Length: 291
Image 1 (cartoon, rainbow, N blue to C red):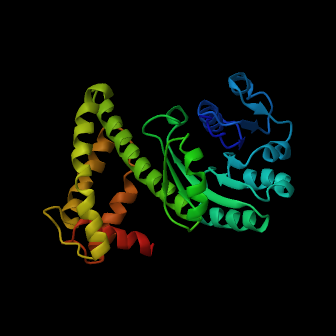
Image 2: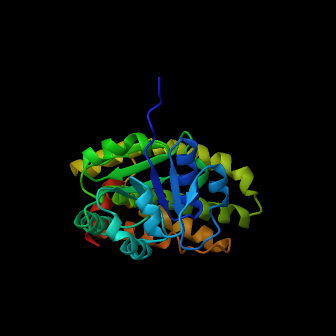
Image 3: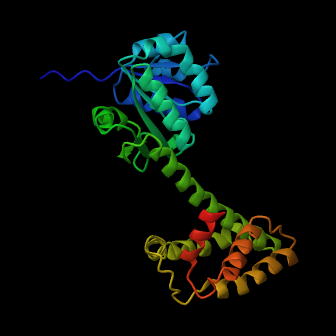
């Protein structure tokens, strides 16, 4: 029995993530053409079986599905302007980090040039691409996603978020906001501990157990946000605001900057002034949306 031919794919952009994406496609058996604005990054890929194109237009002409992973939206638009004449009939998958509105504008532009379009958010670091645990979020027309899903699976689990081209970017950035908030809190905690002479490695198992336990509160917070019922479960905003000053004071006593935590203090105080002292933390979302 003959093996069906793999879909030819082009990758524009060979930074660390672009190289990882192209490598996963080659490993999955896809004819893969690559291009980068700065030459010299394709040696390992060509040795593995990829083809390096001399121009972006040549690269796009070789692929049925075109994956874009560049620095930012501005660079993406500049590069795609070079290949606009050869985009018709192809599927453009933009995996460049950007905003929801940028994704919507690019989708409109791609459609006007005869191309299908998907926008994506990569929830993985380069080393995870093609491995279990890698997750890529996509948004755009469902039929386009379904047609490309088997090819996109080379990168990791492919999760479609709906037809709005901006949905993947929104979820990507929202998840990153949660991640940076967690890392910021952890880094501040480590700074406090280190100021007292305690090794970060000794403290981290305790922090891991604590943060893991706290994740269990998220479903109840979500229900409060969606329902508007912010009843406190023993952890009212007023109590949190009163105790938060000790966190800041202890930080300053240890010579640790409070710059990461000051916005949280202001938000708690604003919530109390707005009459949410007896409410749970889910009430803070309303204040964030009003600011």
